[in-house]
Image (cartoon, rainbow, N blue to C red; front, side, top):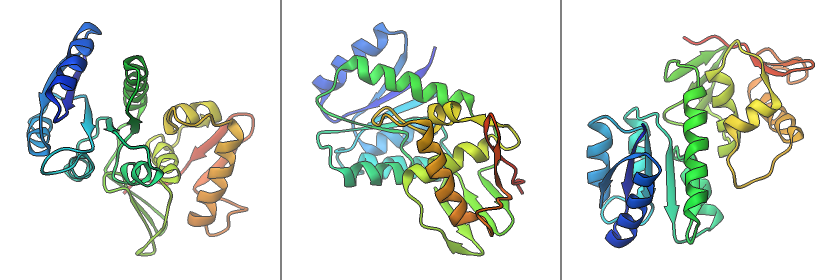
Length: 229
């Protein structure tokens, strides 16, 4: 049984969703503001957090960022009344796993929760910072440095890199990468993975045409070979 933290300033909306999650077999804790959310998650016993963006005091975005800084590795789903792309991009940059705009069907939220938890349990354990060559990947802070300088990356590029790093030494098929690094909003194809891998290679490899860290495994997909420090 999974423990879910539900954080929403609207008590009626929160209780309605609480009832449905209980029916689905989840154990549910609730908080009404950002400070309460941080306190409950950091106390332990939380597998997934659902955060309203518009919380009083600390916003859901701020809470998400703080949770990642403090080492919380469980999935975080942000919920908002607005669907602007800038909010979605910012949320992903701050460490959210998914982003859902109201109004939504509870069945869709449940499906996203299951996908996030499935991706989370499939991740190989590893250190919060991975170093290979002159590259440093901060998995919690969502930052990448190359020779001490920050590398600009889109949220999707970082999610792909994180997926590869967390499965170092394990060949991943394109379908496995799509399942673990992409969400439900887009309908990507295996070719999408190839394009994003090419972008990563241009940013990280000394010679993108002869990659050292992200190698192609013909007939399978891709293999990350960098060693963690």
